[in-house]
Image 1 (cartoon, rainbow, N blue to C red):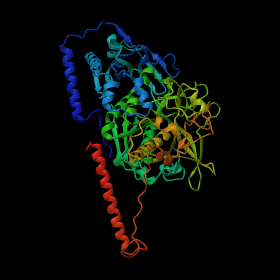
Image 2 (cartoon, one colour):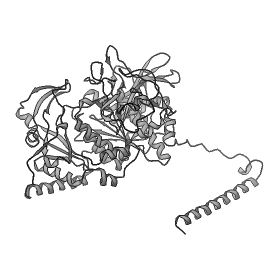
Image 3 (cartoon, rainbow, N blue to C red):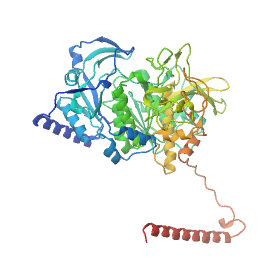
Image 4 (cartoon, one colour):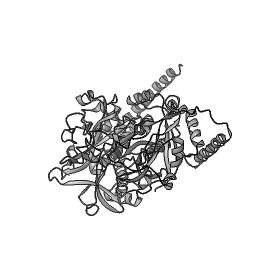
Length: 628
């Protein structure tokens, strides 16, 4: 059953927030004005230069009255202290207790309160609070923002439509310069995009044209005893998913997944006007994470749109919900070329992702469908575009997931090899995203002894890969992933599929770790890179994504390769064994063979003596530990 929640906090907590805001407003209105020098600090990294963006056109710089009165959502993010130290600890596989985060890594509550009170005093509306006092979420009219933050706005056009967006950088009182990292959301035309491809003209549900999660789990050697139980996976999309479609999907594929494990959380009021492909994307995300890990809880964070701010809002809400809902995995099928975003946006998101990793949450992003040269409005490859990695997959606090062409033996559907997914022809097409970051340094865990990583100082993408779509080895007959939307079936693929399958696998791995008494994975990289060259991964050595080619070991198309799930789960945890059916004892009276009734008596005295010996040893250990 879908349940909906509209705010970051439950009702009782929202009442406290409302009361707090009322107190702040009362203080601001009655107390003497804070002593500000009048100097201002410009946050130039909060804006992406429009003039240098070929995908954006400024229509006019004079706004009409309705545009001045338009309400924009935005956020002000504070700097996390000792952030490099935190990232180093995360890179070594540490998970940080919240008390330590509060004491050493989260912004001070006094800075947070001071900046928030000033912004509220300027007339902005507080949208939600961040329990980690890192981000202040606000809204206000364009005129308010112009007057208070010194921003110039213009009307701009992109492939997604027209927007009122900032064309100059915001500023704040200089007294906040050391506390504030950036101001985000003032350019709503900057958006992430789904990394999926759909083929809607297939025949009826259940036809051979589609593969299902069970086919993929079998191909990648998943143990039957892992289903993701006691794990929660969060996905983010600007569209809803009908439970009727989930029921149809589960019944068609014969899955044990249930809609009782599915919850929708509306962020900032939820989706506004999703496109047809965005509705399809949401269905793919939920169906394939739950299909891959049918015992897991799935939480869809339904955001208003695909603006950078909405994804930022969802990230903070996931963090706030994580402990109470046991969120251990976040898998998101969105991204864009690094050059598409402002530095402040990426730095702000990186703080969110680091907080998730510190809390033991594994975050995965699609590496993109634009190969080595992304940047087309549809996320495609174009040789004329610059070579770059896609973001957020390039962030060192997440795992980037690439896509492969999976070959299956037609009769058994068993694994028959993989190659880089690519349809590049004549300098354009689609291919699995991969490349080198222009912003992030290569984390210490990203090494496999190969020359690509050892000689490159910057973050390399992807980390891992898995099916984008599949082919039958013998007949070269193609097959796409089954997706059910509005009661009908379509074929889906792309690195959107790849990352959601990996999201389900991460839940399986966390279940295996729980069986072994180990903590959740958290940041994936430190756990998996030591396993390069082992049977935990299928090394993919053929194909290319444009400029880069696959080869032995790590490569910039498929990373470490695709998982052998059983071997990977055993390397990181313990695969539970299936219970063995009990059978009646043979022979008269159940006695042991060759000993008649005496065998049973011998067993009784043997186990009694063993129990007494263990009790004596346990007592001795307790006495030693207490100093007796």
